[in-house]
Image (cartoon, rainbow, N blue to C red; front, side):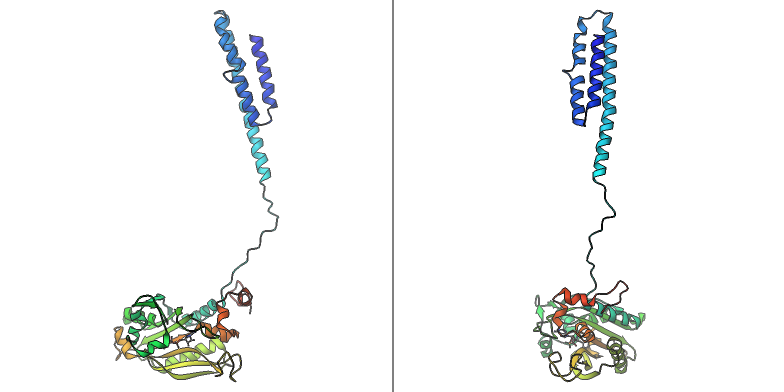
Amino acid sequence: MLEQLEAIQTEAIQAIEHAADLKRLNEVRVEYLGKKGPITDIMKQMGKLSAEERPKIGAAANIVRNKITEAIEVKQKELEEAKLNAQLANETIDVTLPGTQVAEGTPHLLTQVIEEMEDMFIGMGYSIEEGPEVELDYYNFEALNLPKEHPARDMQDSFYITENTLLRTQTSPVQARTMEKHDFANGPIKIICPGKVYRRDNDDATHSHQFTQIEGLVVGENITFADLKGTLTVLAKRMFGSEREIRLRPSFFPFTEPSVEMDISCFKCGGAGCRVCKGTGWIEILGAGMVHPRVLEMSGIDSTKYSGFAFGLGPERVAMLKYAVDDIRHLYTNDLRFIKQFAVKETGESTC
Ligand code: FA5
């Protein structure tokens, strides 16, 4: 039996060495160490041996089993390592391969214009306020001196959501919200509020049913119309340069008295009259005026002590004038051929 065990060991070690993969190695393990294997067979025959021979053969069988087990473990490690190395070699990333170019976005022309104006006003000491786009009728109209049934509500045909809520038609409600909560112990009000507004206007070259506005509001002691005019002149010159003409026309807004509208000479025809300016030679960009004393009072501000001015402008119109865009719809249709003309470099500078 000792020779038999020696032969089993030699045969098993050879089979282990020749195992090409883990699957074959497992087969070898079952073949030699399994219940139906030759070592188990020998152990089963131990009963027939003499008391002298039994421990010798038993010990020899254990040694053979341990040697085979050890050899299997060594081979298993070897095969696992080889498998891992093959996998790693297969998955190697070639860092020298050119990558896929990711198309980089750029701020939209309208965003650029809004940010330019924000920067300008922040530079003049204004802060930025925001308000909800779904607004209460109270703030959009009533707190601005436009009671229910007021005919001037028709100037801004509205999208109502419920009887008392609507998509705001202007950014002026932010005025009322700001004044209501302001404490003059912290200084005067000096804010701008950029944001989206909505009107049931028919879309054409200069009108859109959804557009943006920037509202400006200054309230404090001794604020006069001269301050308003000075501010609007600085705005116009900074945004359009001194060569473009400006005019202030008397106008009407229920929340300002007196009220004006500011026009800029048409970029397309230089003032002669064309489709863009509807033959007038001028394009209106903002409405403004001195805050109506009743509006101040409704927000809890003493109109005998404080006065202020407000203005509301359309950044789309500013963008059109500044970059000679002849149709407001170009700003909303997301045609990349249009958008890419105004791509900005990483420095924030426009390439146009
Ligand atoms: C107002 O909305 C007032 N809230 C502005 C105001 C604020 C006046 C504070 C006094 C004091 P108006 O309806 O004129 O006013 O609109 C202001 C600006 O928004 C216009 O000058 C124009 O530049 C722009 N605008 C108006 N309607 C449209 C439209 N449908 N599409 C694009 N821009 C528009």
